[in-house]
Image (tube, rainbow, N blue to C red; front, side):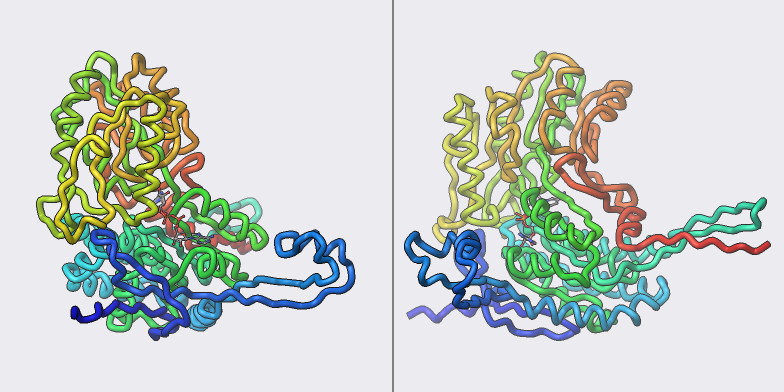
Length: 528
Ligand code: NAD
């Protein structure tokens, strides 16, 4: 008989200590579909039942979902409340650590961030293995992008926090000097998604603590392992207890408790638009500072004078990197009519060479999608496109996927190219967040700008042309927080990152993150 599999058990990290939780969620290895880890399910539902004999009408109105007609004589007052003691404990720890941490000099805090970066770098291979197993991405991706970027996030903000300046103006005729100061906001609530787990979590933690805040982070319940591994390095790096607290769990319990907590004045969220809507509602009564980094439906616009030798491999990457699970991935490709057929032929050929394999395979370009539910959702978009009369040129339902027996139940799919699809189709409007891209022709510059802007999102766009004038013109008219021309995903961390329209509110970057994680105050001194 095979020995029982030993599951990895994660624990919350509060006030410098690992603490077990009362309940746990299963976490799956996307490449096999097997449970391999247990993630704390912080928070609990408490059911309060009370008999209510008066104000029957009102009670029935509120309890309509619990009572059947004719039950009026036995009305019960049922309240389902969610309490999250883990968030309460984290708030207490973060509150306690704030005076000490916020009064350190930027140089002292920078030293701690640099030490943490060094420790992460020393564990790069171990972290990359864990990220790849937890998320389904290729080990190559985790090794070359996710973990190096997490290291860089700490080094970058350790450096940039040393270089901020504030404003000063004078009113000589009134004998006044005015200047601004920036102070940390307090306890920062950080909520991150599953596609780039440690990369995006550290992109929030680093600027928040560099500015002197203490933090409570809630990583995605689907990918919590590397955040837990990060906690093991904090003490050695010199992060005082309570400065970084990590509470694991699901959005409606741990996430909402964090967002609703009156002592957490700021929420930095990266995730989907519907969750952002909920977070906005919960934050409104407290007037919280919000940064929302959301989804995209990113266009690539390819003009007839584009260099296809560079454009095709880059657009393959921009469509399918990380299984298409990057908010910046291209999912609508507009190609000028005169080169449409040639582009399509070469693009489909190149897509077929984008190898799907088990995450540890060094020749694999793409691993497994995050979950069974997500795989089904992505596939359902392809079904809908087919039902609408679109053509699936390669990938799902067209080509065969070969996987080792152990990975047959993993969440894999082939990169898929759709064409002959209308701009009004859901595949051209909604974020699919998988390895699926649509290719459509266009005639003129004005037409393609209008069509590219015709969705609710506005995160990233790519423009391919060798005409410099056109590049500047088109880039300026696109409703998009980021425009890459003749390239994709070259990031300059100093400059603002974020989306327009339903892709979010606020920007992140050296100055933008510092502004977000601090409060500004104007001080006037009358000296004459
Ligand atoms: P999601 O919104 O489902 O979850 C994101 C995080 O929010 C998770 O930690 C989740 O537990 C938490 N959450 C869920 N419900 C919550 C609630 N009611 N209250 C508080 N927290 C809650 O998103 P996801 O599926 O994890 O991530 C994919 C999405 O993230 C895509 O839309 C993608 O485009 C977007 N994304 C955006 C960026 C960006 O920088 N703009 C980067 C990466 C991912």
